[in-house]
Amino acid sequence: MAQQVLVLNATYEPINVCSLQRAVVLVLKEKAEVLEHAARKLRSATASHAAPLVIRLRYFVRVPRHESRKISRRAVFARDGYECQYCGAGSHLTMDHVIPRSRGGRSSWENVVTSCAPCNLRKGNRLPAEIDMHPRSVPRPPRPDVFISVAAPRQPNAWLPYLAKAG
Image 1 (cartoon, one colour):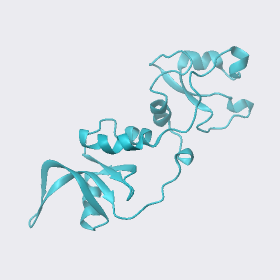
Image 2 (cartoon, helix red, strand yellow; image 1 turned 180 degrees about the vertical axis):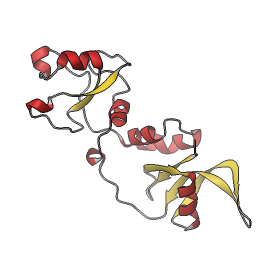
Image 3 (tube, one colour; image 1 turned 120 degrees about the vertical axis):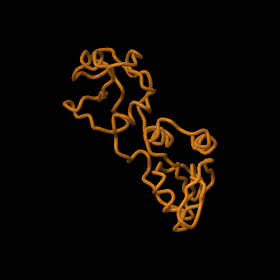
């Protein structure tokens, strides 16, 4: 797997994960600065540079609010801690619309939860009150660090101080 680099906005807010190649290009074009680097060196015919682990953009970039970011199964599962929001199971996970789409429910962060296949099948197209199945936590847009953990499940220790500030 290619090395991934944490990208921080000019305000030190984590905004993305990119490839090592993309990070090097941003640094060489002076669009970003290296905050943390690996012991490993990148060499060319004329230069040697430490491989970046964390870079910070030199200019502020407007990123979409987390509520408007696209919903994905992986992001919903990460937000809900990879557990069924009805019974707590951690296997055979699916996405469930709390208010079913057939009953006018939208595909929004506030209406989608992680559900195991048996609970999803049992709930069907009924409302939570009709079958007495309520999610354990209120569905809401995920924190910014959820998108980072989805993009990079294994995170180097050098990233932790920057992610802790965001959480």
